[in-house]
Image (cartoon, rainbow, N blue to C red):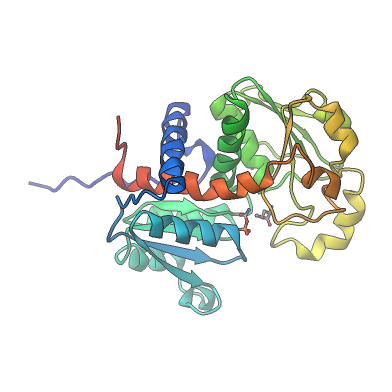
Length: 311
Ligand code: CP
Ligand code: NVA
């Protein structure tokens, strides 16, 4: 009899999960977070090993995945391009074969989305996208969980994205399609969203605005990110000039819904994409947002390795 090959699921972009699966994951996140806050030990992943591969810098992603797997009873191994064979041209397919024979789950932060896709295609274990040039799904899970915690359901609400149409923006756009909320984007000319690169299906949840004030009007979440993402440093000077009018400030927050919250994935540059008044002000939830990386990713790893634990 031919053995049945287990189905391995990956999390490479936001639309890898359905709306119903996110409802489950956010419920699990709430429970896992409560256990953590109550100092309750929860070790469903004891003896499981997470390999984390970083081809770009990180503080939050490394910390939240490493702390997260340990808190679930497992352990983490950190690899980077500089001191592994990945930086010396070993094919990603070969790396995937080897790494996935020695571990239970893999997280990768890298450049092109095709790299995580090629890795996943040759991996025996679940692969998680820890940020690519195109997407940052774990961050958007944390952002949405933060909104739900403080304001309730995100369905039908409006997210205003101000600035670069980068990995964060693309992922918000996908999330709008999956979870049924609107995303209003304002970018400088020449930096507009590329719907195909964002992986959109044209469900009508995305609108583009030339003037950032029009994008934030009545919004429930106002959010932005650095003007120069990792890998684009050569364009920094030009971007500082091009994005100067796309800074989130107090006037923009006033134009939004009075209950609007401000989010930023961090690291932030005060005085560039956001004023200190906004990011350090009463509508900002960026520290909860950063902490929630830990909790959503614990729910994510549990789901990818164990499936639903409380159906
Ligand atoms: N937001 C985020 O992913 O932060 P790091 O680059 O520090 O991981
Ligand atoms: N857009 C940023 C996010 C950093 C967490 C980058 O890719 O550098």
